[in-house]
Length: 93
Image (cartoon, rainbow, N blue to C red; front, side, top):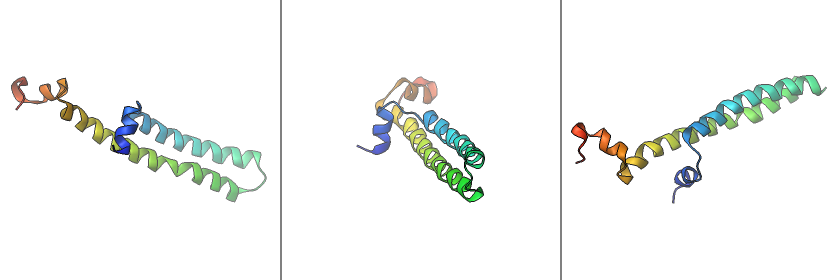
């Protein structure tokens, strides 16, 4: 069983992964601002926090793409209603 299939079966969709990616970008900015204001360690420390959290975004975007691909293929493999609608005249091959 593939990891993407397990994640999909757990109820996580591509939209969830994309939301997590955008959330990570926002959290990166917030952590950078909070570190700049709350700590006296300077810009270097704030940059490290922002970069650390910001590195999560590409992972979530990649997971979202993988899930989107799986979501497109999964209904066709199961013979669901969407497969029926995709064929001209509503008839399957």
